[in-house]
Length: 375
Ligand SMILES: Cc1ncc(COP(=O)(O)O)c(C=O)c1O
Image (cartoon, rainbow, N blue to C red):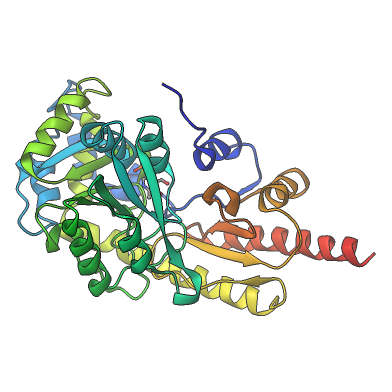
């Protein structure tokens, strides 16, 4: 099977630990176990027996996850190794060569790439910057067909941080159902809305919808590698069968810690810390771009740990990112990884000092670029 390089991930895999400042992270500054756990919880972890556990997810963890969705039982949840595995298993389970899918663009490009490697036709419908990154639903209506198996969305969106209105969610469900397709939503950034208003999950609106989520982004714990699928029981069972061929299970340590993180009070505390960090960092970025109105423009994100910045310079985004990496030891994601030149994705979920340093480097590079053009 041929695969296309997953540029967005490959670039990070190669460079993220080799630069001084890495602003490609789309999640929130992670906790250490010491910060997260109290003494009693540390003892619980030390006493865990390191067996395989439950390959579909420890029952109390599946119970905790199902509690976050309306009309979802623990049998409708599969715990996976990150939401990346959730997306992979779902596509492997649901798609056949010759199928079509309609994918919100821009998007984390994993599903796009997997689908194409499976011989599926992926068609895009766009979020429009002029609409503050709301989706063009006429375009969605135009691209679905009786062969459309899934309508794939990322909500809140990577990379724009846009959040669908309830009305848009309902229209997407209705358009999907008009051609017999299922809505598949990657909701890994849900919970860290900057205004504190967490919207519904697609699963709350329609029990046939399938969602992927996990602890890596809004909940700030990518190192645990805990994700999940929530969807109809027959789909979850079929995905579990495939999980026997991929990772078998996650880790009992991660699942135990995940159950603690998902306790309502603990989840709230983590999300509150994250929201505060994001709001402070966003204010810093807004202030910084105001001082550079001819160079940068962006629609402020409504959720998630990143901003999608449009820049005004006659330089390709991959060339620019390469220059930033080589000359400033600053890593950012070029818009090219989303097929959108003249944008950069900047992570804003790190500590303020770190972001400040990254912005200084970016500013220096732009000033030098303009001086070169002028000279
Ligand atoms: C939208 C989206 N889904 C899934 C993933 C994969 O994350 P993980 O496997 O760490 O949960 C990412 C990572 O950047 C993402 O942005």
